[in-house]
Image 1 (cartoon, rainbow, N blue to C red):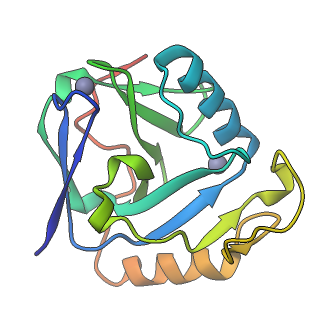
Image 2: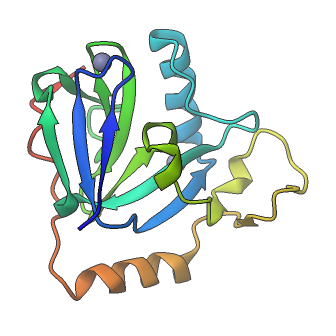
Length: 175
Ligand SMILES: [Zn+2]
Ligand SMILES: [Zn+2]
């Protein structure tokens, strides 16, 4: 099966993602925007586009492994009780992926995915929180909240083959 290297900016952390991504979503939710602002300030690592959208490439958790640098990975939470971790490579301050407990996929920050393997975004979600209103010229379907149909299809595809919904086990600490 094909696999992709997902590396941090300095190359210490190397994840391997096998198979094809499960989706590609630009999220405009308030949490992603807050996280993007924090990451830009704290790590000089912009993850959002000019309209506040963060592009995630979704990958099944059971197809992601850590090849090197797992001791450098730390979970950033906006709220200590949040089920969502944003995992940072602390060697160089690179946001790697978003890991929500209960979901069978992680959202890899798109600029971590090698360009030739990076899919085009399928849809924009939580566009009601978008920084600037208006039409997008890029033709990506836009939803005010989440697309339930898309969520259902994604779950259904994964359901058939068994899945992992807990946080990725190789991230040992919080930041
Ligand atoms: Zn690094
Ligand atoms: Zn979001």
